[in-house]
Amino acid sequence: MKKSHIVSGLFFVLVAVFSGWILFRHNFRTESTDADDTDSTESVAFEEYVEESKYRNVGIKKEISHDDTYDTHISFPVFSNDEINNQIYKYIEKQRSDFLTLHDEIKAEPEDDMELNISFEIFQINDTTYSIAMSSSTYGRIANPIHNDKYFIVDTSNHHFLDKNNLFDIEQQELFKKKVKENLMSQPNLDIFEDYLDEELNSNNIFEHLYFTKGKAVVQFSQYDIAPGSSGKPKAEFTYNELSNILKNEWVNDLKIASKKSHSTPDTDEEFRESKESIPDKSPKEIAEQGVKQVAFTFDDGPHPTYTQEILEILDEYDAKATFFVLGNNVDFYPHIVKETYNKGHEIGNHSWNHPNLVNLGEDQITTEISDTDKAVKKATGTITKLYRPPYGSHNEAVDSIVKKPAVSWDVDTLDWQNRDPQAILTNVREQTEDGSIILMHDIHKETVEGFRLSIDYLDSLGYEFVTVSEMHE
Ligand code: NI
Image 1 (cartoon, rainbow, N blue to C red):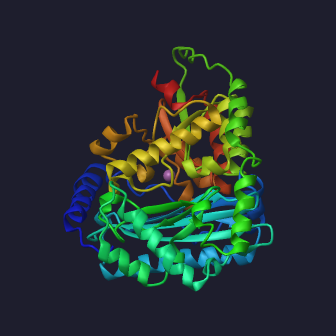
Image 2: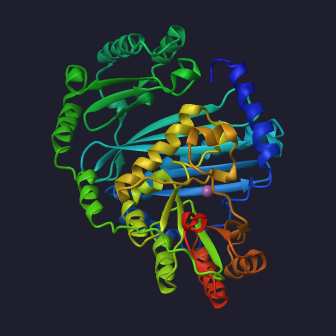
């Protein structure tokens, strides 16, 4: 952000313009949700995001919006406490308003691939306390992507944020800054701009960059803040022992309890290892009888704590199979739903971790988006994905060669994210579906569940067989 990497910026723009726009214009911007079109069950269903989650007291929610000249995909944690939710939401609103201001200032055009992606990482410190690392990225016709990160520490047992400004006494702050600098400057793979680091440290907002995990304190900077973009997000990590003389006693006590407790925190790996045994052998699909028409339903952006399971029930009623292109961060929160989906014989495809436009990313970031999602799916199901669907349908040869999976498009667009209308979904299915069609829906909208029910009932009456994408390709 502070350094002007014009060359890499130009590269992004060129890739976006020539590859993203010219090659894939017809697919682009066909998928997302209007944020203003509020889900009617949102406030009621809020608790379900938390209750269904693997993380105690925290769920994940999405806000997706769409315009001719930009896309936004926002993932954020939700708690069963309005005060905490409001604080997190304040950060999101600030990022969104900055993004829209920039969008207006540069008079963005569709070919600019203007994109706001906000996501987060969650680190469990103890049974009820989490670090939330929010991360916002803006891409488009700008010299460099703009990154803005913020770290919250939330105690969900009594619903409050831990005040990091109260971590250590003033005189210890200087010592801590020194340790951070030594740590960062000694990492051989980092190319730190010392003057920028000093500036950050002297600006006294060191706490802004600090969060905790089960065993460590981490000071992390945004990409481009103190090093070239190739250094990623530079971070200095310390064990609690290393900081025992620096942190105030009450914090040391809290965090020590936390690190002891980490052993008793339910380890989901164990859970999933057991689950593998219950996964049935999937024999290859029998070759379809001649003359039987086939169609593949595909559902993107899930799993959702409620709607995915409702769709699974409908699929069962018709003895139908479908393909779910999941987002890794949703899988992380709701792995049991992905496991159930897979165990029922449906296909799980990769839709990236947090839904960025892959054309806007570098090779390492693309690899991480796909492989982290595969890891989450493997944890949940015991297998990795064979297929991927690029977010926004946006990809090019470079992206495909990095992902190393076939990209799956669609020929029937139900526009469910836009119309939010079961009858309109059915109309699109009626008008566009033929033998061999791949139908696009999103299992994160209430109306899609009903639209899907109408659609599968209609196609069933025409004698269609419902298969996964891989089965149809066989
Ligand atoms: Ni999507």
